[in-house]
Image 1 (cartoon, each protein chain N blue to C red):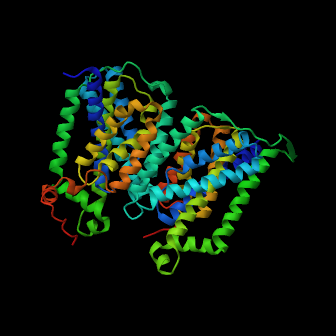
Image 2 (tube, each protein chain N blue to C red):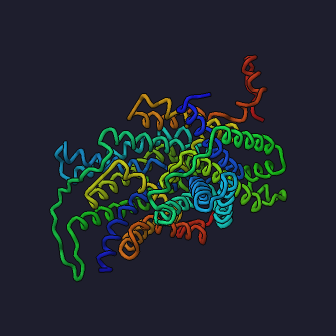
Image 3 (tube, chains in turn orange, blue):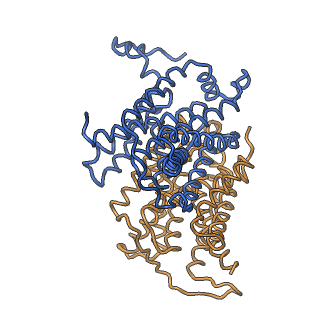
Length: 287
Length: 288
């Protein structure tokens, strides 16, 4: 029973980890929060839904389409809310993206209706017995995609030239610029990558729960924030570990406490972590 | 004097202005809170319960609600002192979410359904006298010892400490005062709408209060009040757009931020000097 719960937690947590990676990438580079990230996540799910139902594509092509679509959306967000306001204060982009998130959420409500929609899976329901565990094909697909993307992202950040440029930019925008790194283009690109990860996460969550709604971005956005605080802002390992941790905590608190306290447990944990270690579990101590 | 609708909008403008000022005090000492709705809710619930369960008069229960908010503010402000900027914002946001979930699960205070039939006492006179007193307070605060200490901490906490400003004391002071004012506004709100539930005090409301302050302009106390007026009126004015209302509402923030980085009312918007210069078509003084 516990093992089964842990597997569900892992599946949910891997989705959260993808959302948190997007948040933390933007925060690591700019030190700012993209509040519209939750809405990009939600729109990713709807893009995939449209591709599957209207476009008759398979779920994998829908996933790719959603990634491209959300990447473009992310770039638009950067152009509108971050590039003009980057040098002003941390509050200005926050408020601007709050405005964008209200805009995108109500746009989705107008386009797709306010109720939640069923998400056609397109993956056959099959179960495999792994010792005491019962694993569904859907769970395997979700875990494979999310961990695969996390691995690719790690390699991308650690090994490629663009990844190196991103890390340099996150150390110091100014110095990176002096060293000949096209800072604006790198920021632009990191928004695309971050949003694509968010979009995929939206599709995976839709697959997991078999339902999507225009309001699903809000809570997930707040949870993404919680995770990057838990893991330490701008820390990639922290975001992944934090995401998985939150998944476990949620599933276990529903299983062993009451479900009505699910959201409170996660946020209470984060509050405690902040009190004990203000920089998060993996955060650097900056003087 | 006014018809019922106008009078109601005026009351909300007044209450929202008090809320905006409550966050402005906190922000004055360089602290960012996204949990003010919880303090507002604490005030609303406390004063309602004092009045309906214990039979306290309106005035006393409102003061009781405000004090309860202040106590909670102190309890949250003290341990979160070490947190800066976004970290503090997220911690207060977490507090807000926890508070809502806890209240929803306590049946003694109505749970998720909330409390019906709160006695209706608040009227425009009470709201606007409170607001006038607060505005006077903030006007006098600007150049007072307290106000200057807040500003010094906001500008540069390390430098302020070096100059002998007791940053811990003033930061907790500002946070507690902000929570107290938010709770006061909350009890006014409860005794106006006559129905409260945890959903009235969710994070969305906290974010709305933050929007008042930042869009209005957080450099002076006039900005937050202007923001509260604008954002309370906007949904009413935009009502003809029906379901497209929120689209325009959201885009409005984006454009205001693009055009006015520091909010609509900046410090020099209010100074006669800069306006007379505009009128005489002189160029603005170059920054030193």
